[in-house]
Length: 158
Image: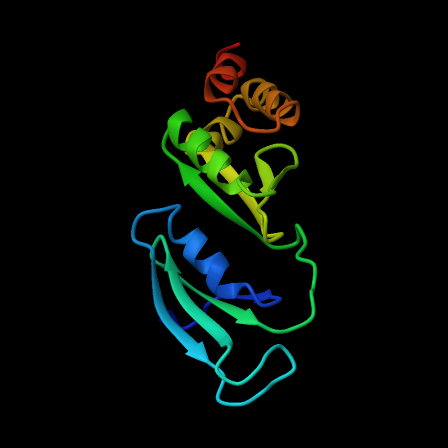
């Protein structure tokens, strides 16, 4: 486990969410499922209390904390995507089962977690020393929901 791991709050479905998340990216797995030794505010004795999992090499914890607490865009998980096929695949998987498109590469999955699905080329385009190129890409991105690399490239190239 990493020294620091994000702990995600769930209302009883931490194990289900973790099992879903590990299907998204290579180097992902369930590391440990901790069952509660006693009844607690979020569940009963032997219910899943905490799930430790690794997602693309990063450790996470899923806590069945009890009452529903809404996640917000203040914390999101950004996935660096090599190409449009990876953008499309992850976008589709994360929307399955009740996810919601937001804007500019953002979406919420069925558990309410916010994700950014970002092509690897975006930081290069936005950091271009030519401010006109960067501005065109930014404007193009602002008009998209799921990012389209070909359209971003056209904006970049003018």
